[in-house]
Every structure is written in C-alpha cells, then in structure tokens.
Length: 534
Image (cartoon, rainbow, N blue to C red; front, side):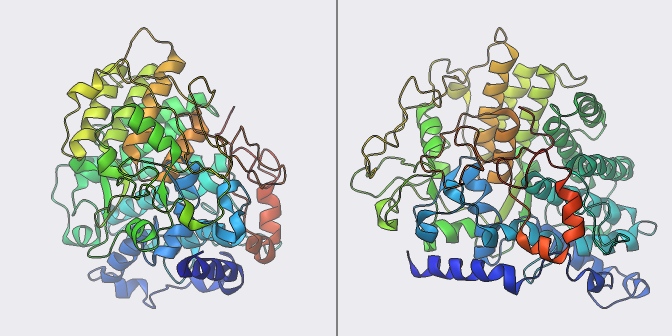
C-alpha cells in the first residue's frame, strides 16, 4: 500500500471520532453561519452568493481529493461499474468487496450537513429563508441545488434529514424523512422552483443570480431545463415504487414550456476554476483507481469511440497498449499487480452532474412507457447517443447503426487464481444487447438498450450509474469474486445501499431508531431502498 493509501486509511479511521455526526451541532447551525443578520445580507446578497457557491461545490466535493475518494469514488464509482481500485485497502477487505467501511462512508453523508470541507443543507436553508420573498430567482436556485444534492444522499442511505432539517422532536432527537417522504418533498421543491423560473426563462438574469451561478453563468432558461430534466430523472427513479406518482411528475416535466437539456452545452457542469479534477489526482497522482472490467467489456465490445476519451491504454507488459480493466471484488495481493491497467484520462476542471444525453435517454424510457409528450423512444434513444458523441467531438453515424456488436468477454491475465476472474460468452453476467434500435423488441430489451447507453454517457458520475443499475438491473455488471459482508449482502444481488454511519446512532439515537423503521429490512448494505423494487 502506498504512502497516500495509508494516509487515507488513517484519516478515514479517525473520521468517526474527529468529525461529529451531522446532528451533533445543529444548535450552532440554527445561527447564520456567516455571522450576518438577514438585514445585513439584503443590500447585495453578497453572502448569499457565497452560500449558493458553497452548496454547488458540495454536491460532489472536489477539494481535498481524499474527500471525493470517500464520498463517491470508493462507493458509487465502483458500485456503478465504472471503476475499480488496484489498491488492497485494509488488507483487501473494504467497500470494494462488501466489507463496508463506516469511516469511509461517513463522507457520503457528512458533506450534506456539516464538515470542515463543505456543506449543502446549512447554507441553502439560510438562502431559502432570506430570498423566498425578496429574490425568488435565488430561492429557486437554492431549491434545485438542494434536490440535486440530497437525492444523491438519499439514493445512498434511504432516509435523510430533509423537510425536518434542524427540527428537534419532543424526545430530543432529529427526525429523518423516509425515502418516500423525501422524494415527495423533492418533487414539491422542484415544482416550486419550476413555477418561479418558467416565466423568467426569456429574461436576463440579475447580476446576483449570475454571480452565484457556477454552472450556466446566469441563464434562467438552462436552470429551468435542468430542473425539468432532474424532475424526469427522479420520476423514473420511483417508477417501480409508485407508478402513478412517477407518471404524474414525469409528464409534468415533459409538458413544461422550458423543455429539457438538449445539447452538450446544456450539461450541468459545476465550474471548479483552476482546481484539478479530483479524479485526476486519485487516478493519476495516487494511482488508486483504474478502469473496471464492465467498462472494458462494454466499450471494447461496442468498439466505442469514446473509449480513449475516458481511459488510457494499459502500460502493464501483460496487456500493454490494450484498454484493460480490473474486476470488482477480487483477490489483490499488492497494488503493483494491477496498477498499470488503464487509468482515467485527465478530466477538465468541472464536475459533470447531468448531461443532455441523459435527458434524451430519460425521454426514451418515458416514451417506451407511454408517457405523454415524450416523443418516440427511437428518436430519443438515437439523439442520446449522438448528443453524447457530440460532447466529445465525435460522429455517431456508424455506431448508432451497429446491430451486431455486443459486450466482449473479459479475461484477467494476472489473476492470482487463473481463470477465476474471467467472464466468457454464455455467462449470465455478459449481456448480448446490441446498439441499433429495434422497435420490434419487447419493453425489457428496449429498457436494457436505453440504460446501457445511458450508463456509458453518464461517465464519470458513478453515483448515478449505481442508482440506475439498482433501479433497472442494467447494464449487466459482474458480481464480486470475494464477498466480505458476512452474509449481509448477496453476491448475485449486489450492494443495494449504505448503512447509516455509527456516529448517527451515537449522536441522534432516537431519530435513527425511527429512521431505520422506514427501511425494508435491517440497516445494512443488502436492504433495498424504497424505490428499489425487484
């Protein structure tokens, strides 16, 4: 294990002691964290701008990079099938083979509420209070950011503190929304923001809104498109749990005059200035993340021109010049075994949280489900591919008409036990789905085709990839070889969620006790979320 990896383990191990549970300091957060009264903020909203920027930078924490590594990389990026680490953290018993590490996973929860690095709920609660009547455009931005940030947290843990944030119950605990309640509130907040922005979409934004906007430089119409697209994403997320609600919310998004994200320039990318993208540090400087086996299988099998836009050829002598990934959850004796497999291509200084290509794939699924105003599944599916290719300056003409290529076999030439990590033709884990759209296919085959291509286009946002995999079962991923969950997580069903960190049990026992009663089973990684219906 390299020097950095040891540092990560020590800092993560200390996290549950050094960083308090998110409920511990709520009394302090009831005060304005910037030390200014509402009247002080009203003249130019200067501190509100700072709070909105803080929230945008906290959805996916980018600095320091070790927080990103714990918040998302060693969780969603791996569970979603995009990446795998060559580093045998904790003696090769960790998240990657289902020995869920509480000291790591705390960082998927903590930035949402309170940490030294970033925060979402505290600054946005303050912004909402100040701007609701006086600056509705800023209020709408705060609502949208809150939903974008917190649906990701809920999709990891299930119940979250959202509508009851900072509200103490009679027994002294702080209550969570169940995931179903949280989603209802997400839709309510998005609807409120969309109602505000719809009539503003043709107007020039205020200087304050522009100053606060790290994504669209003050473009109301693009914020409205993002809000509609996010509403459609969340509508499809709950389609198996509440089909009627899903259709109502999805059709509302599709019917709004502002439309959805529709071209690569519309992508919801948070600008991080001159700061190096954290994945560049994790993959390049630290060598702690590499391409996954499913990425190798799918992109190589499809002869996908985006492959060199995502990854570098391997430098390992056994596979030199190939695009080579690592199978998740395998026996790794030392980092040197796989560290020269395919690293990530350096990413620009922006955090990609939603693409226009994804919006087209959302419409494709909505159309396949017969929702109003969705257009045709074929047109949207093909537009999703072409829009994703355009994002990288590529043409999709040949790719989109390929009715033959399928994901390729995966062979691991460096496996400690030869053949143990291989996935060959005929395996239940190797998909046979092709690229070209076929209207004659049944719904499930259409869904697999849509989600597989959506999965490719959403890279490198592994959190969304993991959520969509759990919701649909697509794309087909490879199960772990080593399962260190002690029976809590099924190898063939995969990890479904993350348990509430022990710190929360210590600092908010009554609230957590009520929260876990809303789950479908015990508070562990094998229990499905509310929207995760088999």
